[in-house]
Image (cartoon, rainbow, N blue to C red; front, side, top):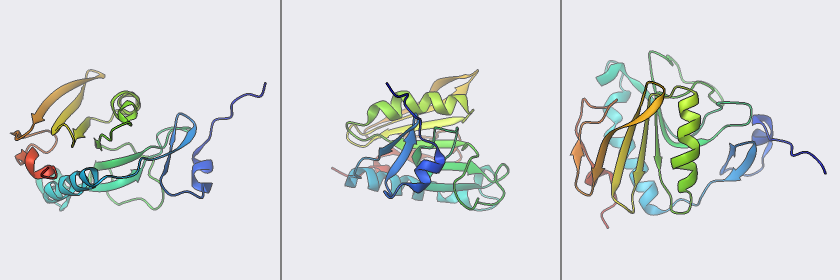
Length: 183
């Protein structure tokens, strides 16, 4: 019996397919994007745009969508949205980034909940990512987590028409209805 050879970032970069990521040493296809997912992703990015300006709330951020982050030799997921404080990342990198983000937001796709709710939280926790948000467009819900004492703590839950100030972007009030495609 031949030993399983874990794939690395080099293997991922050589992949002829575009919508793939490296999870647990396997190159896996990302799910096909549905309208509700894409809309929520773009709306969330728009709502947080004020933070991307230098000197804006929070000191300025870099935001990226569908960004691959190389956390470990066999771990390079693509995040729906990720953000880095400019004080930690003064200039955007050329190529794949290996600096863990300060915030990650995943828009949960039906059939792919396991990665977003079980696998990624453990990876992000190991790498000290301070904030992790999950948005379920179909369930009209957002749950935000903060790393606290080495474990995740729920810091906000918005449902249906919920509104709130959610760290690390609590300088503005988010309206969940604005982030979701109106069904």
